Image (spheres, rainbow, N blue to C red):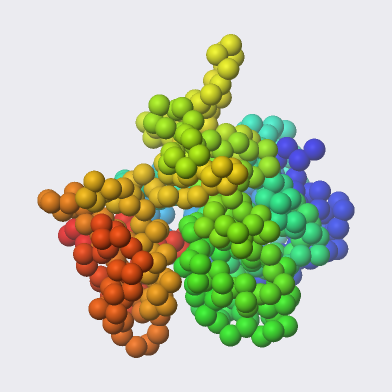
Length: 521
């Protein structure tokens, strides 16, 4: 029974020990070797005095050691905390302190970058380096010891925990304040892996390119959904869109999941026909994919099934659109994934009618355990599920997403916008994504973000920030003329700002908070 996340690898090792599990650059390890390395890492943790429930922060780029550290922590009974390698020392220090990590796994160069920041992380007792370095000596009397990567250690006494135990803490940006740590149980992680792998149709002969950060729920799921069926994962630290094409060609990749800004870049690449034909499916998450980009991808990958997905870190994955419905309703985020119920409710929790916008509420096995060390924000987002029978004596917790959606008469959902990103202008509530979609359809822009800026007369007015689709400058007047043809007057931008590129968060999404700060500074 797969009650904990490391059981995915253990089961694959039992069934397909010689099959390739993970590739990084020129190195490939089999499932049998990966499981041995995971157990060795877990044994080394326990030998250092590691206790069940201790947190292990993993601050690395994607590499085989990263995978071993994450799953080895689980095998030892701990809680892994993947940290995005793009974060700066101050941000890393905040996460390590907030989750009270006892162990930090990193590289020699990253340890040097952390410098004095790590001195403020009082909970850290042990640092594990991926390769020998001058700091790996651990003098007596130091607050924390530093050791090299374990090459041979006693096998761990495998955790006797259950699926309700903490498995991971994933830090995600909020609309305000510091990042919040979403606590995921083993049940969350395993159920999510098996559900997504099932509806996407992952197979043991698949080759999945992991292009998203493993600190991002969709990025980590590239590992778990593959391991759940014994598939092969190719690790990629994203630099240029051409690198995606190169790795897909080299490894004959069959599955690829990205966020919209990355898909926009990938769609513009020259794809060899043979490489493109290998792709069996592509999936989108982290926001609505522009119709123009979806159309381009479908022409580039004629044999691939497109999966348009919606999710949030607090519940991993909520909905997906069946590929057979893409032509009929490309704007839909689909319907609930297996073993999940998605509700659309009014502020009082009552169900919305078809066509009425309401908040998306997620109930089921993927609902996270809450925010680490943050009862106030946990109480705001994790609340009793609406519509429960009054005779039940215990409460069921659901995730109130903060996302506004509409359900049509056939049960398909459509994203309207974030409650805290909705633009309120001239008495109307306007979805930024609706304006952005029209901007993309003009063919003049490469990236687009619509924001609401405070306006004494209108409440807010719309500002559209764009980058050019080509080397030629954007003709703003021509862009506005096309927008006027497609949008009502109240939705038109009052101002169009042209940037060479738009800022992105470490997870690859457009950094709306940063853009908003720049506009209001």
